[in-house]
Structure formats: C-alpha cells, structure tokens
Image (tube, rainbow, N blue to C red; front, top):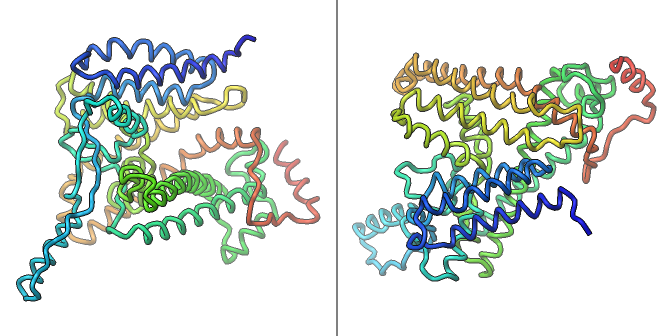
Length: 449
C-alpha cells in the first residue's frame, strides 16, 4: 500500500522535528554550535521544503524557522537556562515593634519581585537533558527561559499583580467564558450578513433585516458596513486565540495546584496572556498594535534573522537603519508564513494579496517610526500633558485609519475561505432569522449582478 504525497509530507515533517530534537540532545562537548548547525540544518530544511511542497505549508514554515532559530541564530545548549519559580523561604518571626514592621513591609515588597527562582542549565544527565530539550522545543516565546540576552523580553504581556492560584483560575475562567460568548456572537452575526456567505464587497450595504437588527442595538445609529465586518473578524480572531491559550493555561495551572504538574508546567508565572492590551496603541501607535497588543507567538522567529543581518552589516542596534531592517524582514517573513495558511484548493483565494497585507503594515510601521523620529518621540513624555494627550490621539487615529483601509485586503481572502469551508454553527445564541426572507433573496440577487 503506497502512501499519498500528503502522508509522505507528514512523515517528512515528523522526521525533521525528530532531527531537531536529536541534534539538541547532543552535548556541546561532542558537537560544537557550528558543527551542529552544519550537520542537522540541511536535512531539516530538505524535509520541511518537501512538506511545504505537498501541502503542509504553514506547519513546515514555522518549524523550519524554529529549527533555524535554535540551531543557527541561538546557542541554547551553552546559553539557555530553564527558570523555576520557587516559593520564598519562611521568614523568621519578628517582634511587633515599629522598626520590625517597617522591615517586614520592605521585605514583602521585595518578595513581589521574581527573586526566588532556580535556573537549570543544559543538563549532563540524559534523562534530564531529554526533558530540558522537550521544554525548549515547545517554548517559542521563551516563557520560563533565561536566554542569556542582555535585553529582557518585553513583548510578553504581564500577568499584573501577583495573585493566588484560586483567584487566578477564577479570573481566567471568566475570561474564557467571555471569549466563548464573543465567538458565538460573531458566528451568529456571520449567518446574517451576506458578505460572509457570497462574493460581495466589504462595503456592500446591509440587508434590511440586518439593518433593523443593528439599529435596534445601536440606538438608531447604523455604523458603516466595513467597520462592522472588520470588528467582527477582529474580535473573532482575538477571542479564538485568547480562548485556546486560556483553556490550556487553566488546565495546566489546575493540575499544578493538585500537585500533578511542577511549577514550570503548572505555575501561574508560566502562562502569561497571549494577547496584550489595546491601550498600548495610545503610547506606541501601529507598532504597539503589532508589537505588543497582537499575539507574539512567532516574534523570535521573525526577529532573529534581522538581528543576524544587523550584526553582519555592522549597523548600530538602536539606530533607525537597524530598526528598518528588523521591520522589513519581520513583516516580510510574516506575510509569507501567513499566506501559507490558506488552502491550496480554493482558486479564488490569492496568497499574494493575503501576504501583501502584512507587507503594507510593515511599510506603515516604518513610516510611523520615521515621523516620530523626526518629531523627537523621546521628548514627548517630557512635554505638557495636553501635548502628550494630543500625540496619543494622533497615534490612535493613525492606527484606526491604517487598519480601516488595509484590513479588507486580508478580510476578503479570509471570507472566501470561510464561504467554502462553511460557517460555524452557534452554540448558545439563537439565530434571529426572519420567517419571511423574500426581501433578502431579492437583495442578494441584486448585489450578485
């Protein structure tokens, strides 16, 4: 029985992952960093290129970038360390004097900082090394790792104030439930809007029943169709990413509380939010939207090639040319990788148009940085409050305008896939479909002409 090309591609994909793990298990005393890259990267690339050619584009693209990151751009066997958060040691009893109380308050403030940690370098024991390498392979964001970099990883959203495990679980269960409701609501809306069902422009007018429904919940004001559809897609994407991340976090932290998982797997610190706060747009504009608000799953994969090129060219890391190199390379790779997520059997979908959305974002981010450099962005924080607020409003408007103009490029391709794959059914919210939809059918025929 012969295997299909897709099955062979899947086996090739798994073989490449096995080669990566096998290479990382070899101690640096046996193979140096350069020798390891020369020995393992070429066969890994060959396997992933074949997997890409037979339909595993996105998975192959992510894994080939990840293998290149670990074997070429980074040196995890000699520089990386696993971080284990440990409870603080018990403090000795203090006498109830004013001086002792003040000292205990200062010590409690210090305990809020992540000082009680243990770091594990590359182990010498094979069994420990196997666990160490597996943890590394699933840590694309380097959560729970000390990479030896002098600059901290500021792309990770902060967990906020330190809180108990029970309170953390309750808060995240509420967040997961809210995301589930948002997904259900956006799925229900897509059943009512013709844009998500037939080939229509994103600016096409609403059907009469949908207009009446929207007017009912917006106090008579009918928002622009493009804005509503962009918000529906954006909220849906945000809720899906957050829900998946929070469900995994709740399970692991719950098992950690039961003693089934250790602190690295089941600790609160090991599960920061995947998505950031939209408030960063006020202070950072479009680059804050893509650099800190939206998920940073592949940030390290995109930035390491740029950093390597900057070092080769001898450009100052904090200069404008260095920033331009990082932006161009990161958004170029992002566009190619996201285009690989589109199915190949839907011929009306354009991967090039889909990728161009991310390339346009890179150009706009670079333009934003250049303008703020000319205006002296570093001095804005030292100016009067009304100037700082004015700059925040300008950044917010700039980000909204850029997304309003450019999102249809990617939204059209996503909805074409959605129409072929089929709309998702709702779970909790009923579909308020009209009983007599003759007027809707007439409207659909008119816009299809």
